[in-house]
Image (cartoon, rainbow over all chains, first blue to last red; front, side, top):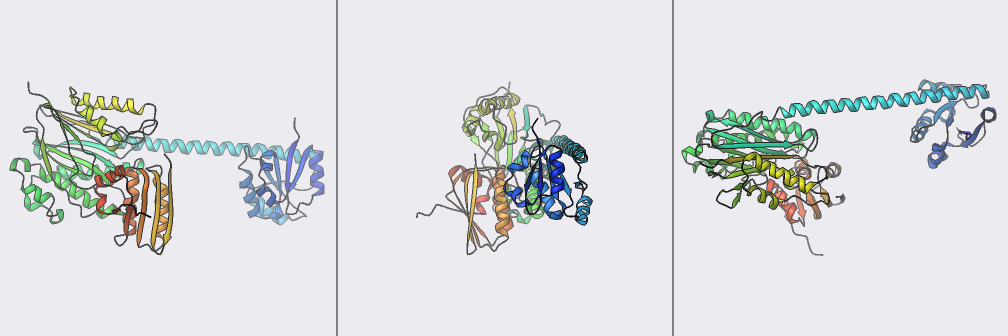
Length: 414
Length: 106
């Protein structure tokens, strides 16, 4: 077996005769260094088994040395000793938790003391690792709870009116994410609201804002009655929802109130209370009249949904306003379109089109439009096809962003 | 996809050159830089982005964050925005809060 190496650290590279002798008699190889030499030349730190530091170096210097030496694996055992009878310095080190040896220095006593210190060091290290593992487990448990709670912020079921199919799915890149979808009845079931939203960024921060924004949108939409011009908030802006709303036919206008109030109200709330945190959401909020197929919507800075026509061709529902929460005085326009039998609407988040393969190539709009226009037999089948396309594109690459999709399809008349 | 950001300050005009992908992995780098800059008096923040290849929503959040931190009196100017990046900014409507410029020939 190799000789054990003992590193003796004193301010001047002087020898401590009785300590050195005892170490050598205990068959240690003795190396002397000043504290500065140890810091400049860390090679010795990893090759030594035991470090003996003079208590006269002072507590601060010894603590620094200890941190420095602990970088080695396994870290050497560190003990302090009194130099020239400086027991006051030794006491101060020992009070701070350092192990020590004190004269008379006898080979057997030294060896046995070092062995027990080494064991203690190993034990302390093991306890530290256990504590780290336990706190990691705690984080994982917390995250898992967060994931479960977040799942509760998604609708258990989507509306299923006669002649229509809704399908939706979401996959966060991490345990929790900032994407969500929603679907619910409005105005006593005469309209259906649906939302796909993407809170910027991902992970826990985005998830907290997801919970807030989802709640604000849904709560406001469900608690706003039909469209009444006198209800309009004055700061909606002349070129925005009011102006657009006046052009609506009475039948279309029925769902406009909840839609506008939800988006404008959420934007105002976010800008007023959370502007400093810099979070915002892009969203597509549609209100469908299941009887006529008319669709009112606001696109707040969101990737344009693809409306695929049964008769061929497609339309992209471009933004009608900025992202929600970016500016207090944002104006949102209300747009409308309609779905005929066999038409389908695919709403998605940027995690879909920006999904990357191993070499960084994005899935892209063109691929998505191809699939959306591929006349899938059902809303669910359409989402399956997008997933298959994504799977082929991404391959073994890690999912980088939250992925969320919602498909709405008007079934063909028999 | 690596990311680099380098900042210089000249009489209240802070210039940051952004290179690579600005996404959730690299956003903290820029956020830190912006927090540092915010400690000094700034009149104008110029971002040289001709070598910025990708801007995710987390990256855009950095810019929104900078805009909100520095307040309305500070112009944020993006110079040499690539079409893909411009599309992301335009889509979210943040183009109304910043000034986008073509690179100046030197």
